[in-house]
Length: 362
Image (tube, rainbow, N blue to C red):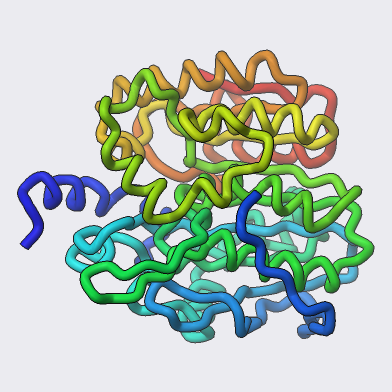
C-alpha cells in the first residue's frame, strides 16, 4: 500500500493539470522518409492512427486533424489531463487521463463532438466564428495519454507494469509526418492547456526544428513553470518526475540551466526564437497548479509574478495574460477578460502581429 505521504501527494495531484472540460538533445523518432502526407476530408475532424506513438499502457495512439486549404497556417493543440510518475500516481490513483486506458478513435470522437471542447461555438476551433484568428488554419489535436506533460522519453517498469512515458517521442513522430503534410506551411502556432501548456513550452524547440525556416509561435495556457525559490526543498517529487520521464533527454540542447531550474527555459526560448512570439495564460490564483507543485496559492502567485517579471517583461517576444481570482485553463473561455481585454482579443493581437500586443494583468 502507498504510504500516507504518497497518498497525500497523489490525492493532491488528482486535480493537478486537470481537464478544463467535463471529460475526464533528446531522443527523437524519425519517420523513414516514405510515410505519405496525411489526407482527410476538408474542414472536419478526422482521427489518424500512428504505428509508432504510444499511450502509457503501451497501446497505440494518434492525432486528430481538421484540414483546410484556406491558408498554409497550422494550429497544433496539446491536450490537458493530469500527470503521473510512479506506481501510486499512475496505477493506484490513476491520476493521468488515458494513461491506463489508452486513447484512440472512440475517445477522439467524443472530444471532437464535445460542445464545451473542440466543438465549442465561438472557440478557437470554430471556423464559423468570424473573430476566431485561427478560422483559416488547419488544426492538429494531440491527445494526452502518457502522463508526462507531453515531455517524456522513457519506458520503465512500475510495480511490474511496463509504463510508457513517451509524450516527447510521440510528438517527434507526429511532427515528422506533419512536416511532409504541410511542406508549404508559413506559420505554425503550438498551443496547449495545463499539462498541454507545459508540453507546448517544452516542445517548442523540437516543433521549430521539424519546420526549419518556418515561424513557430507558442501559447502556454495554465502551465506556468515555477522558480525554484517558491518550490519545496528538497523537491523530491520533481526529482522523481525528472527521472521517470527522463527529462534530461528531452530538455532543449543549449538550455544548460534547465537541468537545475526549469524556468530557465523561458529565457532559452526567448533567445532561440527571436522572430516568434510566445504567450503564457494564467489565473493569478490558479486552482490546480499549487497542489501539483505542493505549494500554497500565495506561493504560486509569488512565483508567477517572479517568472513574468524576470523572463517575460524584459523580452521582446514573450507576453502574458493574467486573470484575477481562482480558476484553471483559459483557452476554452475566450470571452474571459482582464481590464477590458478578452482572451480572444489578446491571442488575436498575438497571431495577427499587431504592434500593440502587450502583457495584460489585473
